[in-house]
Image 1: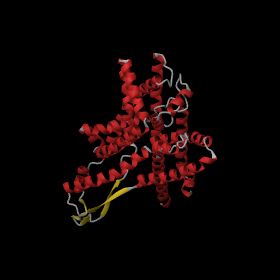
Image 2: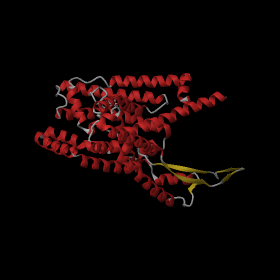
Image 3: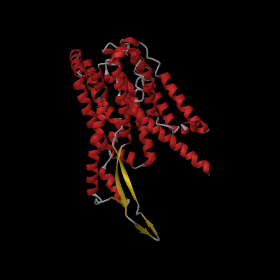
Image 4: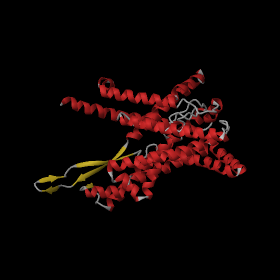
Length: 423
């Protein structure tokens, strides 16, 4: 509580917080302006019946609820970032740019991601609108109307990205994450109204059980985000001239949830791809496109198969993304160059094999836990039989991760100013 009050006692920190709040309010205003031709009742009914679109609404910052100008939110930028990171595997120059050229290389890498966001926003906007039109959620506009909507949606997505980067510059939280968090928080009043409207005295035990489960899940998500496997590292003593270096010990932290939210985004992208493919096919053959869309919708409507496939995809993509971001051979080489070694393990290939073995074990526990969180809403609704009682494990994961990261950055800012005050 004292640190919270210190935020408003220090002038520059207070200004940073107010700027962040102002930008979040500006994004919420943007997310409340719908594109033309939207029927709110039909759209709400369609989104309520589709868990996939509910998930995408989460990553759009709540902008998909009313097909606003910010309906895509920061989704295209997240997709662009994922594509760029995948390209580091295919092209050695991209890998060198991101991993070896320092801050300058990462700045250029981020610039490429922003450029890629524009065509992705156009494609995603066109695909979403066509999919919603085919489902009867919105009326089909004219060609000029469709073009205008796509341009407006693309502009809204770039504005959301700009707001996010301005927030990140204040160094009191990650802007992209805070925008997503704002969308989650904006849905809370509606969720509470649904809970109150559906409450009856006979359901009191169900509601109490729901509250206990929710608290337990929050604790588990905190554990997942903060959990890490510490590998002890020792450094050999080296003498250079009259000085001795090394001889110290440290540890290499391997986080249980190294991939963060990326596997969930990958999994949903795969689940959505067949629907977009059906839309493309319908352009050439309306009958075949309709058959494909019906078959895909029937499969996804089965909660058991949908949940099982979602779980498998999340687990698979957790291993995949961790393999991209953590290279055991490269880490072992860098450790050996710095004179470090894992206690009891020979440097070089033996150390790389040890890292692979430990990483696979850590990833297994993290992937299974992340997969369980992803399918949690399906389980809760199946058990309680009440649609209003919906624990979104993904939402909890985002909220906890964003709050913890924001607290770290705020503590860092306060610590710096504390040291400055002692001088």
